[in-house]
Length: 60
Image 1: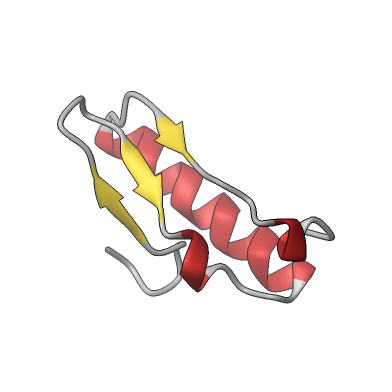
Image 2: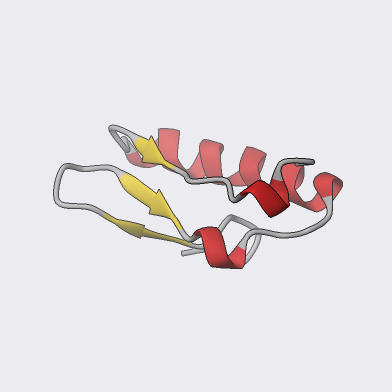
């Protein structure tokens, strides 16, 4: 896991589950980390991404 990406763990189906407790509060930081994570995951052949967005982070 890269520190410039969102925190995540892999699942048993070739996907990733984003750690909702470690999502950044700042929309710009979230966007940068999401873009980095998506590039990493696409290059790694990740088959799916699961991300719950708590109501407290709806502004992202």
